[in-house]
Each structure stands twice: as C-alpha cells, then as structure tokens.
Length: 352
Image (tube, rainbow, N blue to C red; front, side, top):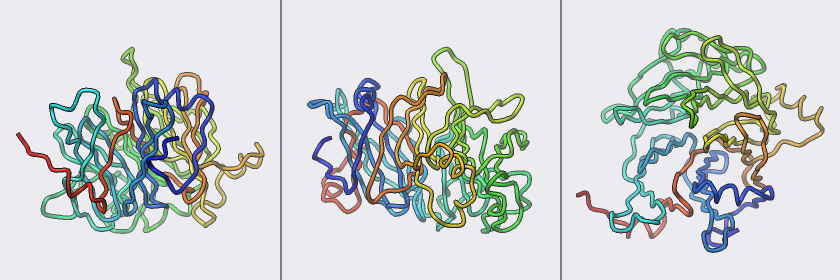
C-alpha cells in the first residue's frame, strides 16, 4: 500500500485484488456517508501496490463518472468535478478532478446520481420520492415519480434510493416499499422492496429486502442485463426485464449498496449493518448466523456470469458503511482535489 495517503483506516485485500485492479487499468471511487469520506483505490505503477486517497466531504452518497465529469451527491448539494488535465499532459497522465460547480438542493436525502443524455444531472430525491434534475433557480426539478406516489411531499414515503441508466435515461428504480404514507416503508423493510420500470411504471420485481443500486450492464457481445442488490438479504442478482423477477447470483456477507462494472465483473460494496431499528429483523442477519460469518465492510468483485467473487477488499477502523462505487477508467492514481487543501488554490484552468 502506498504511504502517500496515510488513510485513517486499515485495508486488507485478497491475494489477487491488487493485480486484478492493475490489469483493469482502472481506479475505483467509493463513498461513505457514515465517515464523511470519498475514497479512491488505484495502483501505484512504480510498486504495483494498492494506492489509496481519501477526501472528506459532508455526507457523500451517489457517485457518477462520465468521461471528464464527476458528480457526487452530498448533504445539501450536488457537487460537480471536472478533469482539468491539459491537452499537453493527457498522455499517460492520471485524471485530476477539481470541483467546479455546486447545485444547492437542501437536505433532500439525495441517493443515486447520474448524467442524462442531454448533459443534465439527475438524482434520486429520496425525501420527495422522485427522480429529480438539478435546477439553476430552485432546489430541484421533478422528472419522474412512481405511480404509487400520489404527490410530492418531504416525507420519504417509499425510500426511493436507486436508479439504473441506459443510453442516458433512467430505466429502473429501487424502493424499499411501494407505500404512499410518510415514512411508511419502515414497516415493510423485510419483504416490501420493489424494482420499478420507469417507462411503464410497473413493478417488475417484489418481495425484496431493502433493494438498492439497480444497474444496467452491456457486455462485449452486445447483450444487455439488469442487475440489482437485495441489500437486506446480502444478495447480488439479476433482474428479468421482460418477465420480471429477481434471481440471486451470489451471497455477499454484508449489507449491500453500491455497484459498478469493470468488464464482466461487478464491484459491489458491502457494509456492517447498523444496530438500530432500520436494520433489525432483516434476512441478512439470519443468513450470517446460519453461515457463521460476520458482516464485512469493503468491496467484492463478482463474476456476473458465474456468480463467483474471487477478489475482495476489506476496510476496518473508522469506516463501517459504504454507499456507492464508481469506476474511473484509464486511471492509476487519480487525484480528487479537496475543498480545504492548498491544492484547490493553485489548480487553475482556462477554457479554450
């Protein structure tokens, strides 16, 4: 592990995680609102060892990387970063993401975030139970709401949390329960979870335990699949977009949130479930007791074809929960400029 970052936590990996990450040529971006950090995991090209960078942000959750753009959903704002590498230094240079814009939304409990085809930033507005777009004049602009939500109100009625994108548009969402009552989802955490088709408004999978992170994957052969996390059961699985239904492919020991793809592998984040009412009585706890294994905080690399999880990274210390994962392609040691560092005063770019 590189000494450059000196992170306030300990990281251990499987025997092949570092070499796998190096072979992909990618770096991984991970958010933890519990610890107020965004983490970067890359590879030091000199030593071949794991390289770690951590930046403190206020309650970071959803992440999205699209070319030179990076957006992060925070406590009361959607932050926009941009890779400011100049044309002269792009060859073999790592991304340098600098904060350039912030859309102040208020504390709407923003979860997943994504870029639309028209360049707009979309996010899951959990407090108001809708998909929203950032606005230059207001806190947000509603884009879509589930059919079972009668009106927009700051009541977190269904705990809408995840959003799958395909060709620049949201196609599927996850919610903990299809309720239209303030905070009504909490009474149905064990088996009320649903996955909803955005275009039709139909529920295509139900009976889930607090599902999160629906994601579309297009493979090299052109096939398109929808995956999701049955978080409260510790299950990574596939969703049949035509016939409906969720099929578990792998059990991962932890409360699952956050998923991104690297080729035919999914990088899934797992957390140690909090000891409070929200996480009590879930199938995950029963499965962990049956398997006689403790919940883990970290990343699992899952083969989407076989369901095997050959590589992993575990985090111990001040971090117990993770929320989202994003892939930074063609990156070894990408930089994320912090708001309180001297670097933010020195890095200046000129638009040509």
